[in-house]
Length: 80
Image (cartoon, rainbow, N blue to C red; front, top):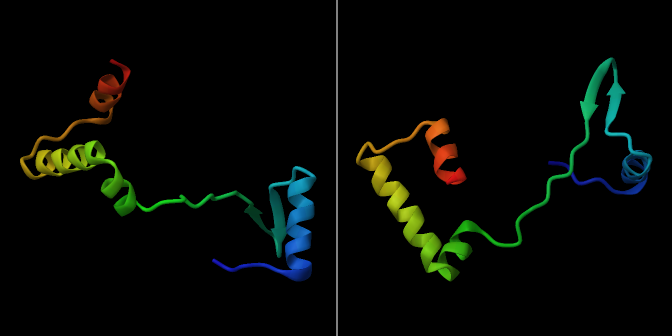
């Protein structure tokens, strides 16, 4: 990642303000996308949420025991 400042940052801000998310340099097209960083880490989340910690530990046990699910099965579990 490169942090932009000065003129380069202003050009990008102007593009975003105008609703442009694509640009081209030397015949190659690039796409701008916002990536927001989480305010907390997974480690912090697990420390503060015992239920989340148990779910992650159970998932780890399931994987180690060969209990795996297809994407369709997981989607079915989420929907019900």
